[in-house]
Length: 383
Image 1 (cartoon, one colour):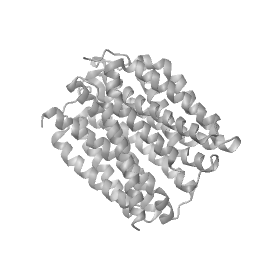
Image 2 (cartoon, helix red, strand yellow):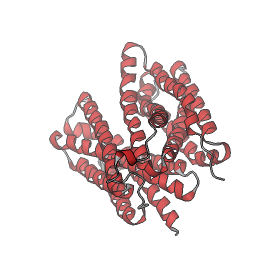
Image 3 (tube, rainbow, N blue to C red):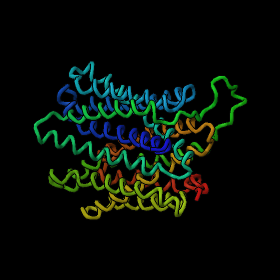
Image 4 (cartoon, rainbow, N blue to C red):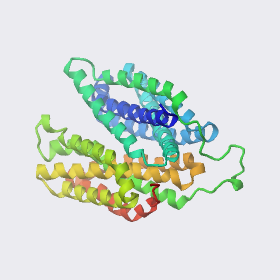
């Protein structure tokens, strides 16, 4: 296997480990809540702590990447995440579970930032887009994690069984990453004076970050409130409540598998505009339609938008200043967590004063606003 191929597989393993672990954690949350006697309000506050921890992890990953490179940042973040998930698996007292979950957030943010840094280096080395496929690996792993949890419950095993698999996966990817990940640095030198550094383009970072923000608002609203919508407004039977979210994940997976080829054929801007427009229309359909088939199509459209826009944005982030791409990507990654807070919390407020379906106008608006910003994704793709 060539060096480039080993690096691609290693980075793909990091995407898969991260999303498998997150999928296992989310599906185990009800069991963790009951085991530790947390209320829903307590759990919401803890998850806010996880998001804050993730933002701190992204900042810390930048610091590590500047000094030692993104390979070390990713391996360290995988190790932290593995330890944190192991603690969550065995933690029963709230006093241990809560800091363990916050530590999960720290690892989560570190991996988010550093695997995108590594993916950017891989694209630079290969000279072609690969982020779509890497994100597809993560999406597929998240789907598998939900299946593992469901299978464990069907066999009478605890819901945290999937977390044990996640711990082993993180450890394996971290060990392999020491050898196979790209050792290059893409950041300013530690001893370099600020006046001598290539400046970071703040405007472009905000524009690309806004695309990431819009995509993750869609993701946060769908993943947090999709099942609630299915239960409370569409009145689906319990066995059918996962239908909307699974449709979203499937559409996102297919979109990510096709994104790299679509970029080569049509360019990032066109792909982004089409995906964003489809997603905006889909979210409007979810907001206004009470017909289940139309709502399912709306969730599929939302999956296409988030599935395409995230890899497109991070691919462009890595190109803004190639010599400092680690720093650019870490900053762009922070928009993810602002979206998670807004998309996770605001629909609940809308549901209190109106009805939950109308909350899907929020991701529709975010996508519409980001469409003019998609021109910042423009760059000639090597043939």
